Image (cartoon, rainbow, N blue to C red):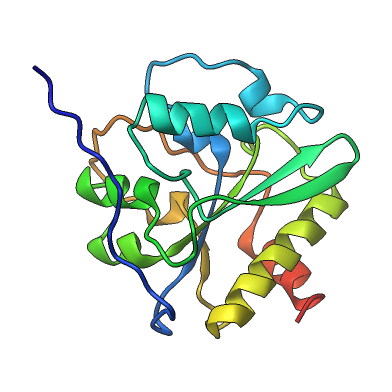
Length: 186
């Protein structure tokens, strides 16, 4: 009988150490290597893909909560910020990436913000960049984290990992742009 590892982190927090980071990724990072998912999970801007990702998180990865703390998604002309994993808990996805050798141990405690889509291909409209800036600025202000403590997941991946995820860069979004859009909301 195969044992299933649950990534339900019992650790709760009310504050974060000022060295903590806000890590930004895109939802395509949640895909297991060699697995095909519905294209609507990557490229659809009409339907809400959060519910499909939640189903995958629970059924495929045995997560109790959602992959990330905050999930930004376009639905029609609007952008939504959907709360995933509670901010008071560790992200099960980041915890698994640490366990599989993708990230250093301290990343287990960080906040994960996910943008729905694949920004290795998709171009981000200005409104989405504004929404990302607003969400990240709000989280940063809530935990009183320094401006410099915002980064992309791909940039932190350790070399020589052979885990089940294929973490890809967001070539159509750079950190300077995110920070300039954050500044509008601080």
